[in-house]
Image 1: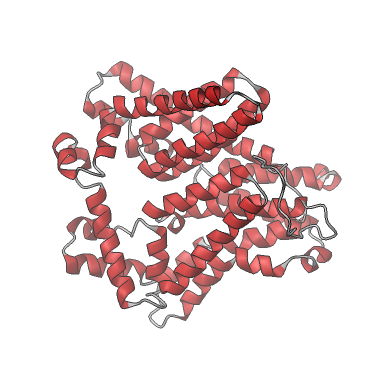
Image 2: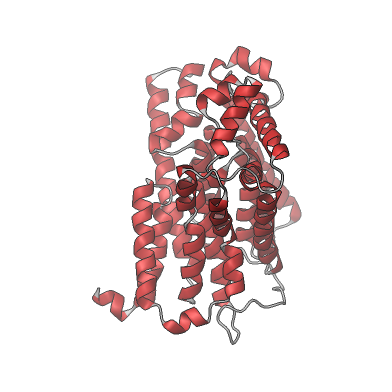
Length: 426
């Protein structure tokens, strides 16, 4: 407490880092960290800070939360609405308190804390893989046990969320390597990349390949390497990724399943209920619901109930039995809030993309691109793990840049864009 009173800003920075570190951990731990961060900001908050908030930007950054509030106006409201609003509360709290703090946070400390946690989880998974392979042969059954969901469950995560955590962590670690040039970072990047590929999240793996290639090109060009060397290094990286995916039959067939479901069912019975065919059933059902409720949708509380009714009507056995959601964030908002909700979400994402591109912030831009891509095949912002991750980093990247503007208002957004690209806003 004495340290906090002497140097509150340092403590607030560490609280931001602790929140980032706990994002991949159980939600209870992460929620406690968020509460401590908010309390810390409240202690140093001054009434003058509230007056200086740019409320127009606050309402834009909180628009997702206010969209959920509008869901309470639906006549056939049920308890699911309140649960979903509770999950989305961070879309209100983080913009408000981040804007109120009005000081820059050390992004490198925050990203380092996050990357340390992710790397520890990857090391645990890698150790389990090595032990499993030493005890057994490399049959498909063993490979299945160290791949995808079975691999992610060893650290208490779903493959999709673990994969996106690794993606952001590795993008930061690449910048860390080019700054310090230490071999340890290469080793961590290799292990993390292996785990990401074995998790088998196709959308994120493809995004990781392209976004990492962009990051490598950025740093290699910044170090003034000849273009031939740049192409060779990026080519070696791509070869490494494709080799791991090809050598593991489970991962190989997981990608083949997108185009050839029959072949998959024959070779990989574990995945007989997965792939493009199942996605088609989910998306067809969602589009059918949207066509009946195009303007305002069915509301948050009726989202899962309407999907189940449509699955039953269309005789989609697996989605009905497993109570699956749309696995597409854009369709999720369209089902819940119609075209109005979808438009709000698209404008919300476009606001971030425009800001990061205009101010030439590469890591935040790559982060947003990865989220936009993942939302095509996953309802990423329907679960706490995705909501907190996105709300924390998207708001931190953008609002931190607000506070870094050397203008009369500490959170004024300049109309002029930066002249050169930066990987991280420091």
